[in-house]
Image 1 (cartoon, rainbow, N blue to C red):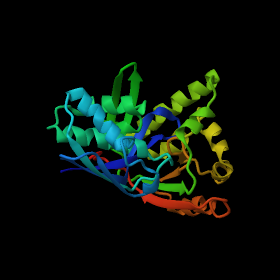
Image 2: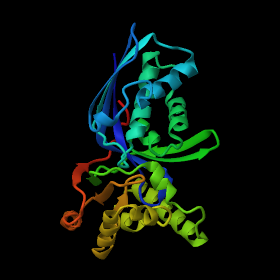
Image 3: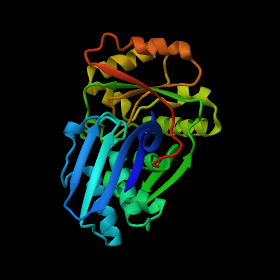
Image 4: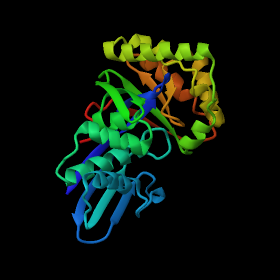
Length: 294
């Protein structure tokens, strides 16, 4: 039996649209074993009732990509999937399924593929590397996709960073979040984001975390996506009014992450913004995961 544990991920992180991701200490667990029978899939945990338990299951479909690549097909498979990561909340649930599937399949076949080959397969399935790369490698991963090749640099999440994640009871599809983005942007907004994304990476790598308040600003996706939910826009406006700049949408949203490394007194101000929102919000305090899939 193969067992894997895959971390949740947060991508974009303000200005790093489609190129910066981090792994977090929230996990999906997957067990896989080859059998002589047909496909059996059991799902427990978060959103289990909404997950396919047949050939359309994302873990299974991702495993098939590995089997097709190496020319192997098991007679039967038993997959047990326990989800700690909520679906469609911007925390990399699909990336966790994909990375878990390709890694488990590779292990089942004796690990013929290396990590870079697994990343390439996972990126092909997901469509972009910003979530699958940190799920696979852990830490902070800065990635760039050029045609069929994915290049990346990985470094650890600073130990002092604390991620306060606000997760709404309602979901938001990535397709809807992509649909509100403009086809064209102003040149000055592109320059703004290049500077902020560069500063964000430099601050995380150097440990100069006091620069994050400035580095997390964005003009490419967050101003458009927060309008998809009244609560999101109110919360971000409230953060601006309180000068809480270390806040960003996790992935495409709707989860919000407040980054803290020393300002405990500011947390009360962040929590207070949710008291009068129409949705129910769940809060998790997480750290960066520097191991990736295990």
